[in-house]
Length: 265
Image (cartoon, rainbow, N blue to C red; front, side, top):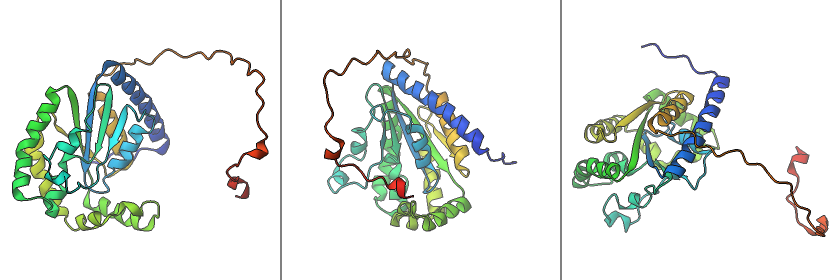
């Protein structure tokens, strides 16, 4: 199959700006209608999930659209029902919640790295489809994305992180260990899809070898799944500011200002 040419930067920026306006409309519709949306982002390390989430959320109100990226469970949480710490983050009416990795940790990293027992893993595979069907029946629109990146492209991104000081923090010990287990993660993903690709909440695969393509494709698809309408409020007209009375500002010299570093550049 012939690969599509890479999108030009100008076209990408223009389309992304258009889509972000649509996302704001979607947000307003969710707020006004009380719709509940939960979006799961999964995929290999360095597959581009975080960059796509950032483009989705950067124009949205964080009180309406929240990102949940949970750390490793505490010792107490390890004794809870597995889904318990995720349930508290599910959306209420008028909210969108994006899970930057989710309960599928059990089917992925926990399975491959041996952080769960075989019994716990099998129980997850049995429970997860029923858990998700229950969420859908409760009125939550559950959308699941898997970001797929090739071995060569993932390795290129890992190598780039080594030389970019702003991205080096992304290379955790777990990432370095997972780099050695490509085949194991592939098998885990295949098994996960076999059990959890259900009609009520199917997996949508995003080809993410080209990050800009992945972002545009994913956001466009997300917009197509939610039946939003343009409920943008009417333009607000600002009244004339009233006179400020006899207020007099204190002397500027009495305040401590941040130094003007730009003046030295």
